[in-house]
Amino acid sequence: MFPTMRRRLQQISDERALSILTKTDNAVLAIRDDISGYTYAVPVSPVYTDNHIYIHSAPIGHKIAAIKANPKVSLCVIEQDEIHPEELTSYFRSVIVFGTARLIADEAEKLHVLELLAQKFAPDFIEKGMEEARQKIHYLAVIDIEIDHITGKESIELVNKH
Image (cartoon, rainbow, N blue to C red; front, side, top):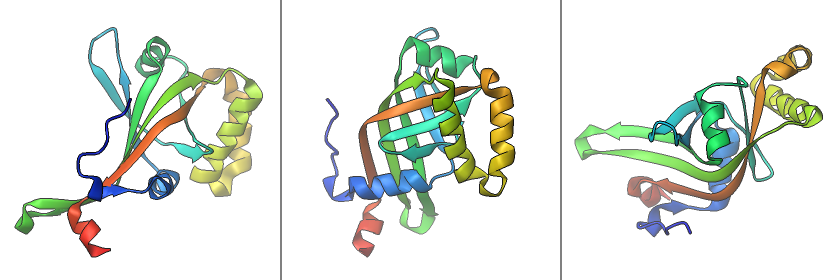
C-alpha cells in the first residue's frame, strides 16, 4: 500500500522516527479536502503515545469538516533542516506519518488526552490546564490519529556522519 523509499540508505529506523515524533512540539497535519479539491495542511501541536497521535482543535472549522469527510491524513515533522548553501543542499531529518483520524466523543477519553497534552506542553500548569479542560470540554475537539505507516528520512550527509 505504501511505496518503499527510493533512497533506502537515507531511511531512519521506525524507532528513531517514533522518538522524533515523541519529542516534537509542532507538526503539519495534511487532510484531503473533498469539498475544495485541495489538500489542506495546518500546523498542530501533537502528543504521541502507543501508536496514536493526539491533537486538540476547535469543534468546528475546515480541519474538522475535512476529517469528517475523509479520515485518512498525514502528518509531517521536521526535526532538522540546516541549509548549506556552499554545498547546494540541506542537512535534514524528517518524519512522515500516515494515519486514520477520528474525533473522540467520550468525555473521559477526551480529558485523558488533554492531560497528556498538558503534561507535554504545560507541565508546570497541569491542574490549571485540567480545570480549564473540564470547563470547556464541550467547546473543543480532540482528534486521535491511529498510525497506519511511519517513515523517516535524513540527508545523505547526516547518514555519512554516523
